[in-house]
Amino acid sequence: MSLKVLSVASEAAPLVKTGGLADVAGALPAALAAQGVEVTTFLPGYPAVLAKLGKTRAVHKWDALLGTPARLLAGKLGEHPLLVLDAPALFAREGGPYADAAGRDWDDNWRRFAAFARAAADIGGGAVKGRSFDLVHAHDWQAGMVPAYLRLAPLAGGRGVPSIITIHNMAFQGYFPADIFPQLGLPASAWTVDGVESYGGVGFLKAGMQLADAITTVSPTYAGEIRSVEFGMGLEGLILARSNRVHGILNGIDTAEWSPATDPHLAARYTAGKLAARAKNKRALEQAFGLDRDDGPLFIVVSRLTWQKGMDVLAEVLDHLVGIGGRLALLGSGDGELEARFLAAAARHPGRVGVRIGYDEALSHRLQGGGDAILIPSRFEPCGLTQLYGLAYGCVPVVSRTGGLADTVIDANPAALAAGVATGLQINAVNPAALASGISRAVALYHQPGAWKRLQTNGMKADFSWGASGAAYAGLYRQLIGEQG
Ligand code: ADP
Image 1 (cartoon, rainbow, N blue to C red):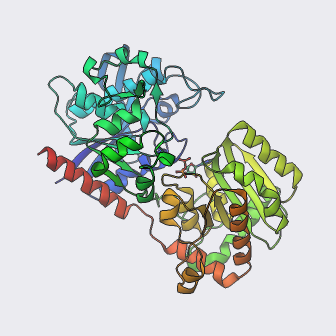
Image 2: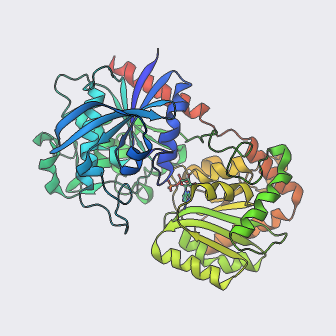
Image 3: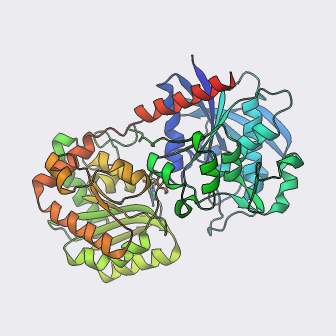
């Protein structure tokens, strides 16, 4: 049976991306098509999305969607169906999806994403002629209210459909003051801890977790970790209470975008059997980042520069990295203080540390295609994609042992090396001593060319495409639809 699923996300590659959510939302339609599921993606109509849409047509309109006129446009995300919420009062503004150009969150984010969720619930309930859905799949807090509207304020006369919420990062919860509640268009009875109330305010992610038919998160290890106070960010009780509804499904990578054999961004394309061709990419990176040319390892970073990503810890160990013959090429943006620290490190270590502050998709591919090892010392990591890209590109991941990093990288301990199965290095804790020792281990292994090449080829041969994960989502969809009977 072919299923129709509405995937509700605030970003989807290649139309709009600030992080891994976009990669996943962008890849799901193809991953699920292979499983007999037709995914329609629903996105907010940011200017960047509308500009890239090309030919569209309006298929529905709201006179007052949480008080705002809005239209629904139909287009394509690659070959797959796309719906876009064109609500100029909410989305026609310069800046990012969630914040202005100076990085300040929009004051009305609650209204922007409640309206988006209200629209999604209407569409899921069958408001748009000729488009019916069997299930709604909501992603992160921006779509967290979708299960709440579906359950507590369904479209009048609409069809009841089950919903899933996927947590891509528990740290971002969409928590707003209680006084927005009367404006959400929910019945008064929704104001309870079994509804949308969370610690005295309205929790968008919490509402989704409370009211969806299933909760998924993006790796098995993270699904376990969020049961604890350390990782649950206040919602561990809810996860525990609904633990029979929680599933960990690892993200895959979109091999059409991320394959070193076909990647148009690379100076030289290569396969596991032709690793020597990577040298050209490494030379190009050295040039781009103003780094010395030598025989030592080139470490890379492609990351948000934040505490979560352990970037403060990395800043602490740069002198060590350089002292043992490493070089670093870093691409990232985020916390202003961290940006300044990395720029200062580049000035202190000319030729050894190169830093590019900003967001650059093409350069992120070139770094994976030319770097020797990617550093990912995250304090927590729901899944993580950059280690998967590193594995696919022969850029050996050096990661902390948490979340999806723990699930996808096999540490080069003596047993794994002897068995020939290692794919990277794990560090035990996120602190300067542990990271420095991980970097030292990487440098030592790099100087054993046979062992290093084995790490690279093992990673490149591992399968992190969407096959297994697409099947897991499809199985869950079918189970929930079956339950509704
Ligand atoms: P998160 O979503 O928490 O930021 P992930 O590892 O899941 O982390 O996904 C990050 C995605 O964003 C990857 O596709 C990565 O390549 C990309 N990315 C992060 N920072 C940058 C940057 N400065 N320039 C280009 N791409 C970046």
